[in-house]
Image (tube, rainbow, N blue to C red; front, top):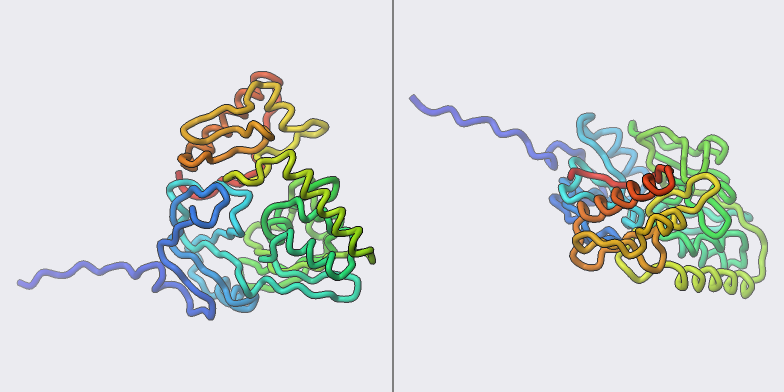
Length: 306
């Protein structure tokens, strides 16, 4: 009697729809995050453009989870990696154009490049973007801000793709922006934005941007393996002051360190794992809670499996 061969389940890649962009299996995510830590993605998908992304979202199997990752500036990807499909917007989402007084920019544009483009067009009001690490998509998703301004102050409207593949523009008011918060429902992926600007003197705009860059360089560990501000500022207080008062400046754990320069930044000194960074962050939270009674909330996202 002939043995019956077990039926093999199709691979995840075989279950995904055809796209014009690119799939990559078992893709290392440590290469793409600023902390340089983290596991692999089952599938990394770089869509060709907005329509390619929408078609994928509409056609993918419902049980396949999707995670969006920008340039990995404000995220800890855990060591166990990420199940399903990680979407990373690339070249098809980096256009920058003027539309009257507004800038129309793709979600994969680096915030600093948007600020530079505005300056080249002699447009003012977007200088603060030079102080925000990451992409426009991430800035939209968390109402990012720096040096006294936030996305809510400059956003006119944003385009996004839903989990069902719908492409839609949202007025700024519809996004229910609050401090480091966007009220758009789960599953939407930002793809483009319209930003208001004002006529300005090019040299004055460039000088203002340089002043922000100099201040950031002087006060933050911008050349280290870090992910930006680790914890949200509690109402009326500054996270770094609470961390410093709790005695956490310079604290280390297995290659992860609380920055000596700015103690609301975690640093990978070279040998840290995602687990060490997250554990160190939780140790900081506990010390602050014990010292001041305040619960610090993570600003950096922690995603994936431990």
